[in-house]
Amino acid sequence: MLQIKNGDPVRFSGDLEPLLTGLPAEEIKVIREGIMRQPFRVVALRTDGSAEVELSLAHETHFFHVNAADLQLIV
Image 1 (cartoon, one colour):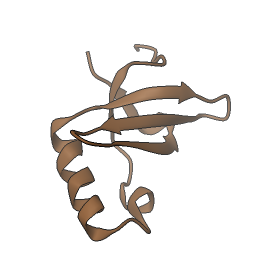
Image 2 (cartoon, helix red, strand yellow):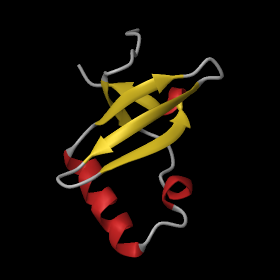
Image 3 (cartoon, rainbow, N blue to C red):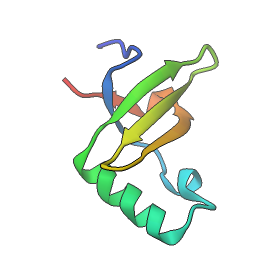
């Protein structure tokens, strides 16, 4: 099994809905479309089993706090 490190490109296999709650509808649409084309990048792995990931799109970057077990390394 490959170890995920800071800076690695990853796919998120968890539930997106809690991450998108409270965001404007247009922003949710852009994020959903971006996830299909662009991998997340690990910003920080935490000792509690979570991770901070970023999704960089054309004009903005979104950061999410997720469960590290829901990340799949892109090789």
